[in-house]
Amino acid sequence: MTRGKCLVDRRVAHSEARLWTLSALALLIVGLETVPVAQVSDANKAGSAKDSSGAIAEPLYSVRVDENVRVPMRDGVKLATDLYFPEGATGKLPAVLIRTPYNRKNATKMGAPDLRMFAEHGYVVAVQDVRGKFDSEGHFTYWANDGSDGSDTLDWMAAQPWSTGKIGTYGCSYLGEDQILLAKLRNRHHTAMIEQAGGGTYRQMDLLEGGAVSLWAASWSLRWGSKIESNPTPPNIDLEKMYLTLPLIDMLKKAGGPPTDFENLASHEPADPWWGQLGSIDDHDRFNTPALLMTSWNDTVANEAFTLAKLMRENDESARARDNQFVVVAPTTHCAYETATEHTIVGGRDLGDARFDYPNLYLRWFDHWLKGIDNGIPEMPKVQFYVMGANRWRSANDWPITGTKFTKYYLHSRGRANTRSGDGALSTAEPTEEPPDRFTYDPKSPVPTTGSSSAGGSMAGDQREVENRSDVLVYTTPPLQEGVDVTGPLEVVLYIGSSARDTDFTAKLVDVYPDGTAFNLQWGILRARYRDGFNKKVWMKPGEVYPLKIDLHSTSNHFAVGHRIRLEISSSNFPRVDRNLNTGGNNYDETDPVVAENEVHHAKMRPSYIVLPIVH
Image (tube, rainbow, N blue to C red; front, side, top):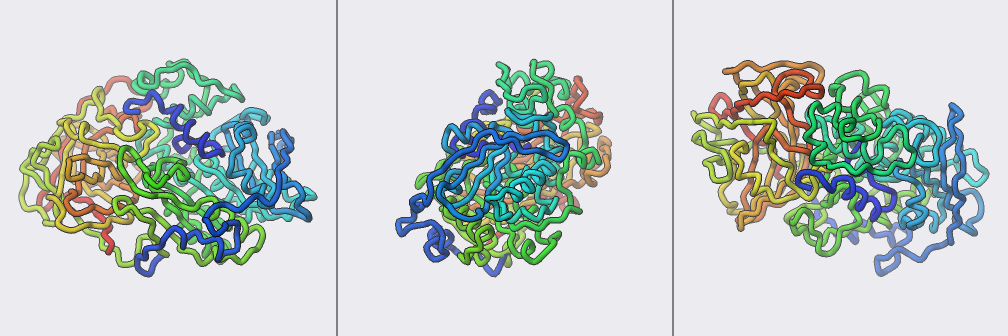
């Protein structure tokens, strides 16, 4: 259930994502080559629909829409599907399938340029309401039927007289997750996919961030997850008040929301076998579909695209799948790729000209796999990504990039790293004997999420106000004398202690500008009970010190001369994730929080640090 769960139409998707987060609290590689966007997306050379100006070529066909075609599933349930046909196209045709919980009619009414573009260039496009939503029959359960229903739909499409049997899939967020759940079934008609921001399917990592519950799941369920209404109208609910509700499991019920799957999603631990019935992806699943995996640095599933690409290469059924997993990473927010302009602003940060020729890339991708056009798609770089700060597109053929220097930046202080006015420092020098830093974490006064959205979880945003809190530890380098390029996976290792049996530790990597503006780049959390793995729980004892690792996902950022590298440590990020009540209990069914006195050690035998992937 990735934040936003965007509609097929990117513009609609962006506005819908904003709609349901409105009331939230702060609402691969042989070197690193610079590749101009024009080179990356040059469809003239590749033989697809791009003219010399770089614009999409004129449509080849007008489009006819057959509405509300009833596609039968194996259990007799019929799913409402709109079919877009290229008028005048002769012979059998390839197809593109898009499955959505957001009402296929939005695409029909608003034009949805992406799907019409495919039909205008010779594809039959099927847009389908998922089971139990809008005009489709059956009952909605998050993820549970998406793989099998998608496979049945592929079989039905392939059997139609207009079909070549070659079908691609397309879509962002839930529409992307739907594709991953389908891909593991290895339907022979699933010929290629363009999967966008759907990484939450892998071990439900976006639902349970470091073992904490992602609260966007509550607002998404409220807006789209009703189990009794096929065409839900959002209740008039104060989200800020709702997020504060205890116990967590009664959050939607007390707010007057409809029955949803949120209670189940929030009450099962990361390694619970229960997740298997929903179809979530694990390391045993196998794949056989070439994939264009898209994500954004300012999205909470940025790293999952790389994880899925690696899994689909290693668990391949053929060289065709193994050799054709590609990743594109934009600097924008969730499902907002095509909102980039020549002056792209994300969370108040100027990221320059972040435009990318997405439409032609989409057409070229399907032209190659579904029409058999030799247009150079398999030869393009395996990874194309935007370097924030440097504000340019680059490419590579491995991830992490060959030659990356994983460098430890150690935490230092004299025991007073609280707030950005404290004495916390960050450097490559190992610590000697230094006193630990301490802070009080009170679940009744959590650190607020600060960014361009809140429970929705986009990364960017000025952190200065948060850094004034005494429950935030701040460690910063001196102004850089030369630029530092950080590109790749990030990890934080902390030596921690607590008065509580269980608590959370959070980390943020921040780019501090010369004027003091502090833009967040990535964020992560670990619930301390899972420090030895998500398949078991271990508790803490007062006076003891424990090592733990926080997955900070991935980024690509140029820290320019005069900027500073900063690491923030705390114990909450609310309402991005739920508050740890510090009791050591279930957390989701509790109402009485405990205040925790937490500490971070950084000494010779207990060195806390962040690992930065530095490239040249």
